[in-house]
Each structure stands twice: as C-alpha cells, then as structure tokens.
Image (cartoon, rainbow, N blue to C red):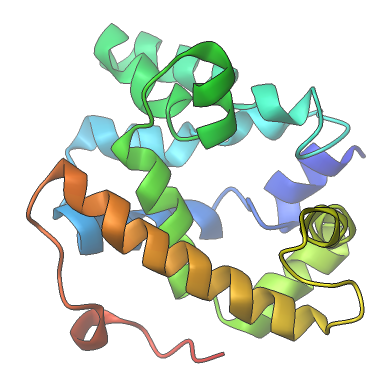
Length: 183
C-alpha cells in the first residue's frame, strides 16, 4: 500500500478523523460551514489515494481529485476552494490560497500529540515530514518527535489565526472552545 493511501486509511489524513478536525477548525475560524463546504472538507485530501509520497511531485498534486469531485457535486465555484487548500499547489499554479487552507492547517489544534504521532508513524509519513523539517532547518533530526509536533502545532495554529482572519471577522477565542488536546 502506498504512503498516500496509508495516510487516508490510518495516517495523518485519515478519511474520518481528519475531516472532523478540519470541520472543528472551520467552525473556530469562520463559523458553521454550508453543506457544500462540508463536502469540500470531506474530500479535500482524497487525492492522496495511491500517491507514492506526500510532499513529492505526485503528492503535491493531491488537491486535484478533491477539486474535481467538489466541482461535480457542489458546482464549479468549489473547485478552487479545494485546490487552494494547498499552499504549494496554489503557488506553482498561480491560484489564490483558499480559506480551506487555514482550517486544514488549524486542524492540528484538535489532534492530541500521541494520536497524531501514532498515525504519522504507522503510515510512514512521519519519516518524510521529519526529513523535510530537518532539511528546511525547522526542527533538527536529533529532536524528539514530540518536540517536532509541538513546534509544528505552534506554528500552524499561529499562522492559521493570522491568515484565517483575512476571510472574515469570525475568529473565536480558542481558549474557550479548544478540546483538551494539550501537548
């Protein structure tokens, strides 16, 4: 089974858990999503199916399947909502980053460290993510997985709060709504 499929079945992008956390993040940033936005939340990462990597050439094209599905189910205006959830895909294709991007990134807030690391380790994603973090200088390889997760969560939560505000003034105080998922 390829890593992209493992990610959807039992990894970081697990097809039941990940959409739940993205939904919670969307509510936190923007309020309750429409049914069409919920469809987009559900299918946005389905393109990882069959991919041999997460951040390589193939994995980076993962938004295309979800975008195609959303345009068929919800209408063409939802196509770019999914394509724009990937910052890299948006950059290389001249697309705007969509508000789904920031809900997707904020979703890590609802992942307990132990559950995220368990899924990432079981699927094999953790190795790729840690290698990328080391190469970029974000977190050294010598640091623990838990330390890496803590730094990643801090970064993504902060970025999402700042960038998510650009899509509306509905930003709820996370200290009052957060699930108890302490690091």
